[in-house]
Image (tube, rainbow, N blue to C red; front, side, top):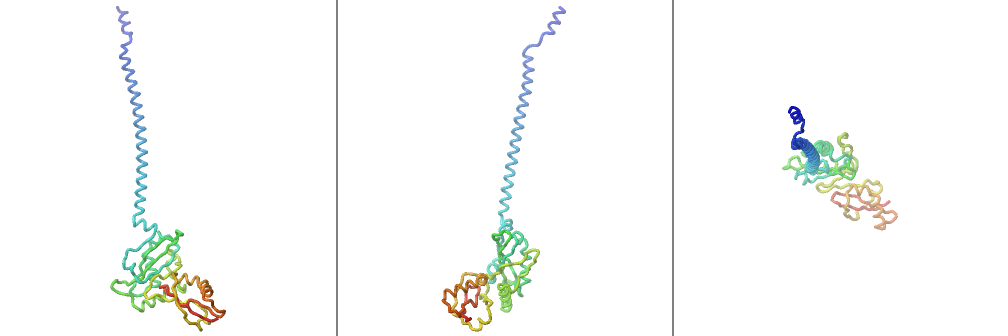
Length: 267
């Protein structure tokens, strides 16, 4: 009987028990596989979220960039002051500086211009700044207007201002701004002035001693453009009018309303 008991103790348990153990092992393997899948999905979701987040930030920054305060620094500036826009005196020049730098210095630029050409009871206001083809060049338009909207610039002050503008157009006067910020202005043009401005091209005295005004006509060009191409204009007039060998026809007065007087002289 003792031996039989020992044999009974050595007999393996039912298969169901072993199957249960195997089932337990299988259950553990299935859990590990499920965990790996969940982790993989988590990684995919995380990468997708990061991508969407970065895309959203990019779109937001682009939208902010196109808002007026940010767009002004990129493309230029246009004044919203109705008094400046409707001022009777407008002029322009070119600065070899990027518009983004100049927009941040509008106050200083207005101060510098006024110090150069300002007259009593007036102020200078920047009307617009536009970037030119070379991105480091900017066309600046400014206006001169009464300091008070209920006042006007006096006649003597307008006369002084007119003289300053003529000297600037003929390059007899330089518009000096803060060099470290603005550099040297070029291509000064007068766009608007009460009654216009007459500019007399520089000619030899011998011609002007014997001249007479023949007629006048209008050119759709600025005074600066006419002065720059004055020799070509005289050649075209000489050819078109069939001048005699001792005659010369040339512009004697030009104003900013596009009006041009033609004078006749003798060599």
